[in-house]
Each structure stands twice: as C-alpha cells, then as structure tokens.
Image (tube, rainbow, N blue to C red; front, side, top):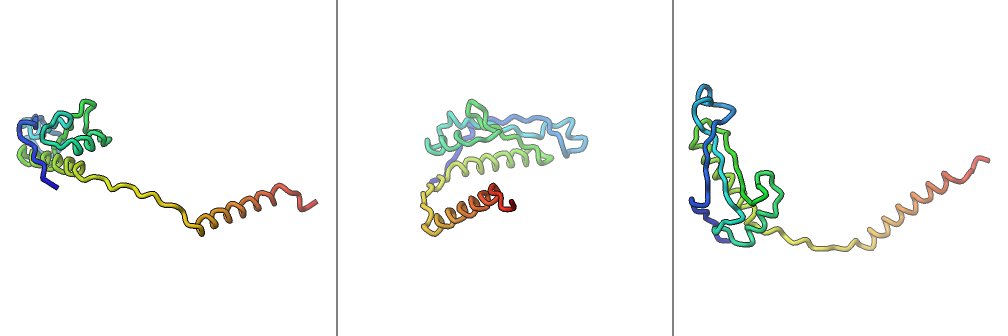
Length: 135
C-alpha cells in the first residue's frame, strides 16, 4: 500500500509544562507536547483509512474527530515532539491496514453429536436427582 504523508499544516502542536522527570526545569520549561490532528477533515487520508480511524473507539479521539496525543515521557521538548509524531504515525498505520474478513464456519457432525451427548448426560443427572430412589 502507498505510504500516507501528513502535511505540517494539518498538525497543531502546543507546548505545555510537563509533570514527571525534569528536575527544576519541570517548573520553568514547557517540554510536554500536545499534538492535535483533525482526522475528520484531513485531506491527506484516503476515505477508507479516515472511516476506520473514526470508527475506532479511542479515548484520545474527541467527538469532533480530532486526535489529541499528549507526550511528556522525555525531558526535552524535541524528544517529546518526536514521540508524539511516532505515536501519530502508529495510529494512522493501524487504520491503514484493513481488517481481515471473518469466514463463517459450521460445526462438524462429530461436534454436534458431542454437544447433544453432553446435554443428554446432564439431563440424566438432573432427572436422577428429582426421582426418589431411596424410598
């Protein structure tokens, strides 16, 4: 399949202060990245991929179809930026591969027979419980 390239103009990055590692820096420097990508209105995505991504039940997706990825794993803004973009690429790649269609199968004759034998055996056990054999 063709590779999907998302133009810079469709990505919105916001830098915020991160919680977690960073020492004194964490209170002063905005190292966390909030990457937003509007899946619903993107021109870069083929229609089939867009439909699959919007159909996924992902907590990072807003009701308007905007994917919000928050990256604050690293101490530097640049590494968090790379991390967010890598996660976006993984998300889009997951939507790019079509799910394999399910093939309906029928149970074999032996499997049906085993099921019925089990049901009959269970019925016998229950029938023996209800009759009074010790009178």
